[in-house]
Image (cartoon, rainbow, N blue to C red; front, side, top):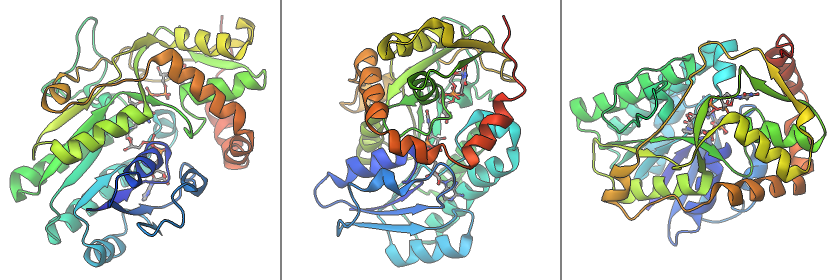
Length: 339
Ligand code: NAD
Ligand code: DAU
């Protein structure tokens, strides 16, 4: 089986490529633009493997995408490529809408033209918006996205589904909760808190820090995607949750405890505009239809993640140089600490 993976140099995409390459006989073509979030260092484990090919390119480039799909004729497309950060989508929505919506459109068109047998669109629980407790979103829950990021993902989900309904393109959609683990770009909550804490830097908690997220270890997510790739039904949506809901402050306290740093590092800062209060996901359908379930215990996964960041300070230094500093200043510079 040959897969065309998009965004395979990012956090989840690279974990998926490493895992998929472990499957005997599976071949992977990785199409990635290498934005600030794409990093070939994440893929040294598969570099040089005869079953792996890397192509640098933009999923919005229809000529390139059509030529590549026509040349490689993959059995399936697994589509991760996206602008994935909510804060950046608030600061600059344009690349987010372009990649997440237009890029998905370009891929769907190429898949339709070349009769690709499976199109797996990787999406997010953020499309359901903020849920009142104790509700959990199953796949029929209404879409109610709040940020340019989540709206662009919801729009691309609808477009992907329309290609199944209208053109019978065999589309499946996955919607996962918040991922954490090694190689995550330190703009998201957990890697940002870990890398700042390890340097005794301040830990910027938005608002009151009581927002709730459901944490999913990245390898559990990738196993869920493989389960849907192999066993999912055409036209269906599958939630993939970690079954571990925690308020942000609790996550931050655990990071401090595991790094041995003081609570005085916490800085309560101005909230994110349109900040969703609570996500909660039911993965009942995926568990019922496949043997999948999340297996990583959060405390173990967090400790493992912290150890990875401790042991890979050179990786951290490289991804935090240059443009990262500019982003950090832009996002946090005007968020003075509040009591
Ligand atoms: P990431 O930001 O770490 O990686 C994104 C990758 O896509 C990078 O390698 C980047 O270079 C590439 N890319 C961006 N724009 C591109 C373009 N125009 N053409 C080609 N490549 C491009 O993202 P991630 O956290 O690994 O997320 C991957 C996917 O999973 C996204 O679709 C995201 O919406 C979804 N998702 C993420 C989470 C999470 O918690 N991180 C949870 C649920 C779903
Ligand atoms: O739910 C799935 C989504 O999870 C994915 O679709 C997105 O790609 C991914 O970025 C993530 O979105 P969130 O906005 O939930 O993740 P983030 O790590 O940015 O923030 C998690 C929570 O932590 C959120 O309530 C905001 C808060 N936060 C975040 C940062 C970066 C802070 O309090 N301080 C921060 O500095």
